[in-house]
Length: 464
Ligand SMILES: Cc1cc2nc3c(=O)[nH]c(=O)nc-3n(C[C@H](O)[C@H](O)[C@H](O)COP(=O)(O)OP(=O)(O)OC[C@H]3O[C@@H](n4cnc5c(N)ncnc54)[C@H](O)[C@@H]3O)c2cc1C
Image (cartoon, rainbow, N blue to C red; front, side, top):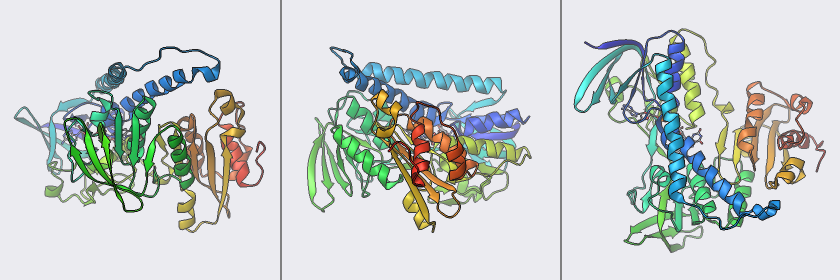
């Protein structure tokens, strides 16, 4: 007999497991279905293990620069195997944490491949055995996977997806990273700091192309200064995998095809949603460019079926997935959550230097018809940044000149991924320049650059 629930969540990433917890908190009998690891990509193969790797690289970098701080660190070396082991340990700890949270919230976990078989009906198959579950509401949270290059399959040996790059069989000596979005640039930064010779190829005319142009330009300069080769407006046309490495044919900005030899290649050209074989077509659930179409309450085109996270529209970020999970669960429980507002979702990239942003870039604000006021404050004018030896960076703010509304904030430099939330709270509360100017920022902190950037937009910066 089919097991009956109030809510079934298909997929246990940061979207799915958070949705399940919130549904259970609201008194709904909840089940979650997962075919691989509880916690999804984020905890096991994404956000968390990469941050663990990047932390090792950051410490390694500081050790190499110990002299700058009046310290001595001799015979420094990096053991990639131990670095990866630590990262996998961190991922495991978080995976166990989710297992514990499922138990604590009395959420039934069904391990196996889930498929919608009808409205309110889901099958779960494992080891050839299929069970049927029913629920009035089903939340699809199946996430996404790495997009492959059409002309070169990733093989885990020389040509890597993010999963391979997270568990490298050995340290690459000469690495080609294809794609400079958040994932590509984080791996480029990690391996560069760990001592590899890194080249990044980006098709667009600048790296991290979704960010503000000033951030892209600053980051490119900083990464080049660290020894990275960056080719923008360029495309990899061919990869030939040999016994000792990979030969790449790259069409550069000028249209000339150049050839390069690399020990390894990371393909980071985007993601593909996991929408195949889960019953979407049979139920007539609407998709667009492969992703499930939802309204701001996470409803799909079919009543009783909801979708959240990477399987839906961008931005494809863990915190967006989790927030949608809460919205969907609350809406199912008959509450009235605020609908998702994608304008207020921050984005962070943990390269070195870090970048973080929320809201509109200067160009997008102008495109949207705003008359803007822009403030820029460099970290070199910030006492804490200088004391930390981290004076490389800036904070940029974009305001609506007419109303003073904060439209966007863009940061590059040390700790900006921790600071952007200040602007995110401001944006969510629809703050204006007057309130931000009136806010007292603690001294000495790099966050003072946020205040100064606001002041700068109105010609009132104090320390520059
Ligand atoms: C290398 C890397 C670094 C990243 N870093 C960050 C970061 O720093 N910050 C950030 O916000 N985001 C980051 N992301 C993105 C983030 O991981 C995703 O946005 C997030 O995991 C999406 O969550 P989700 O719940 O939608 O799906 P996922 O985390 O993808 O989880 C989906 C789950 O569904 C399961 N599933 C799929 N199909 C089925 C099925 N038919 N039956 C059963 N189970 C199924 C999968 O096994 C998976 O566990 C990173 C991603 C990568 C790859």
